[in-house]
Amino acid sequence: MTEKNEIIDAGWNFDNSYARLPESVYTRLNPTPVSSPKLVIFNGPLADSLGLNAQALQSNDGVAVLAGNQVPEGALPLAQAYAGHQFGHFTMLGDGRAILLGEQITPQGDRFDIQLKGSGVTPYSRRGDGRAALGPMLREYIISQAMHALGIPTTRSLAVVTTGESIFRETVQPGAILTRVAASHLRVGTFQYVAKWGTDQDLQALADYTLQRHFPEVAQDENRYLSLLQEVIKRQAALIVQWQLVGFIHGVMNTDNMALSGESIDFGPCAFMDAYDPATVFSSIDSQGRYAYANQPHIAVWNLARFAETLLPLLHEGEEQAIKLAEGALSDFAELYHRNWLTGMRAKLGIFEEEPQDEALIEDLLNMMQKHQADYTNTFRALTFDKPEDTVFFGTTGFTQWHEQWQARLDRQQESKASSHQLMRNSNPAVIPRNHRVEAALDAAVNQGDYSVMEQLLDVLASPYTHSPEQAEYTTLPEESTRPYRTYCGT
Image (cartoon, rainbow, N blue to C red; front, side):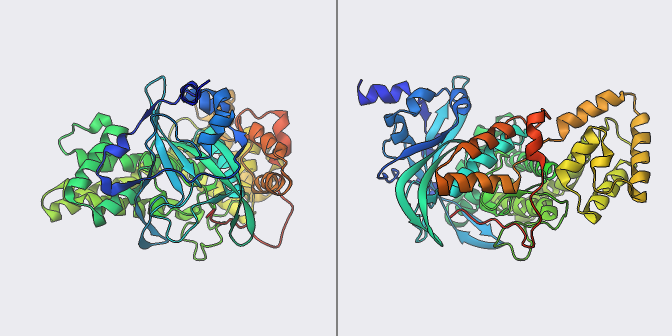
């Protein structure tokens, strides 16, 4: 079979709309080949949904594409330029170790970016080697799979291949390349880059492209750029709430890590809370707690304000009026977030209708959880199955009073208790990617070449709301440690 037929059989169906934008926002560049690629994890269901041939992609020719050694027919590889505020400081960035192969058009007509992460040096590498280590790429695979199963908008992972090469960080580590699938890689930082170094025409072209790709329903609005800002705000308000509801902490909410599509993106020093504490920080570099759990909504607004600044020339020809329009749109975030959060928290407690005192009931529970260092996920799991004795504060006066108030609240509903508990089952996951489980899976894979631990974890995480007996083992907490859990950027 010819090489051309092998590639066609893989099911690639590329378009390259991003490459039709002004050349200032990208650099045409092929991935840098690697010495000895080996496929170590592959997402068959995702491949199927993309219209790809899973068997062909796991062949030698398929792995060559996933490793960047071979460019599939129809692809137009490029590295995207963007900027960003990193911990509040503006800097020039870009795809320093990633190549966008192109956009896969699925049999349903949907469009997804196919990106190779760890695929070599680009003009935006800033003295980096353009490569990625196996551990961080496997972490992104695990977390993105878990987020998808939890029902949270997220970029996806199609595959991880090892490269047969060593890379140097603090230690020597095996190299790897992740194939990432995204609605797009348009970021707040993409607009910041164009606003800083592009022309007004470039900015308008990028904004129109974003509208057509993600928000076509408002592309014909009288002030479509204000509508663009409003739609991005809505999606981010919904996304951050979903993070908060499951105790997810992104870790590095820089503006270049906020996708305009509303997907979660870039899983470096991210993690999930065990004990509930709004001040929880996992990232080793977040010494001031800028991206702590409780701060995520506030940082989202800050990032969105930076996005709004880039749009000012498009919002109105008068700067003063443009600022007023932007501020008006941004002021909606707090209400959108608060309403979404209350709805989500009510669901976690089996509450269907609204009552004014609901927020106090929710806050009282969270305050109790913080005081007693209660596990966030397991506490809601115990309440879901009417097992208050499984909570750490069972028997305390405060919890007894709260539980009575909660039961009285449920009794006032038209819906049955059975309906409330089903709502809770659908809203409270039995399992999350516990940090110690993720670390165990990564250690076995990276240091022992054993991927079975990771595969078992992925199987459990694939159905977080089934509450099956097989998941019980994965609900246990880590052993107590005097050292806080820390995560690190996967550079």
